[in-house]
Image (cartoon, rainbow, N blue to C red; front, side):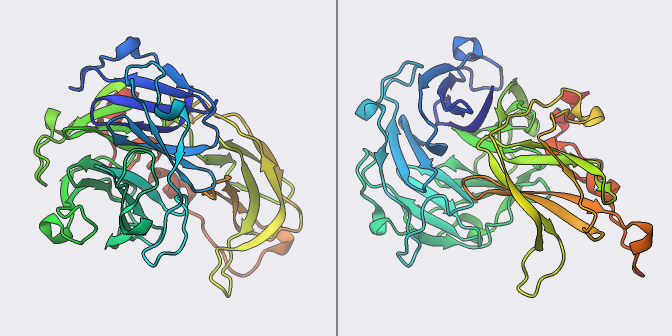
Length: 410
């Protein structure tokens, strides 16, 4: 089973939406790094018909916030929290409206790079420009009552370059940078004003977090992290003050498998072809996507490239990653093929995949020149280097990687 969204609260309750639009409940009964799950780790189905939901995140006390595909925020409350179906409002999500920018303009909750809860009704968002915004759900009962009339308060800048950002409770925010280091921040104000511990400078408290595709809090310093191959790791920041103070000396404990988080991504083979030759594309697209092709040449308006060929629609598709993927590849099935037209010039191209939420993923490939059309300039595409530094799954020849993942894979 693959999930398109996974979250947890501060009591060990985890919720996951499957690609079949069903909501499942799990409970980490140990919360100490051992694999001790309620129901023997089997997810309990507690809801159907979650197809209108793009993603969920926990607000604590049984609250689940859900972002719809059209940018609205819905309020749910799991009153049971034991794997049975007992929901406030009979399980009907209460519409909390759309987000607003700091100047009051309508934005929609899908216009942000990420959205997560800070507890007590606080919701943080990061814009694609890297601004950190603060919102507060004052009611926390399904009514549309927001601080500042629902307008986000800008409390930070420069948050757009992180791989992962997730909360730690009590104003703590963890951020993973491009080197795989995890940084500690603490929003001491928690009221929409800028008052940060360490003057807002992130404190590096660990390494090796670069290969996770998702991370979310479990309360009391606990963090769960998922690899692209579906392995769940448990961490606990025992200090929670900006110092290195992790349980198990910072080594993640494997507490589960099969937590595949479906997301839009893919690869192609071969990486380079002559006109007339065929490329196989292997794509995971849980919500389907549209594919168009770009020639990645400079444009006067700074656009990424110029469109070539005709766009196509791809139906929803899941992929299963082979267990020996670091040595022999992911083994994904072919989603579609491209026979490169004879008129395409030699250059670097991409297959641009765009899902219904606007998320994009580029699959880059090279078209080589035929003998009679070679120019005077030779361009070397360092495909081996690209692959050597590829951090997918935490496995890299040179960059920071996750030691426990590498141990597991061996």
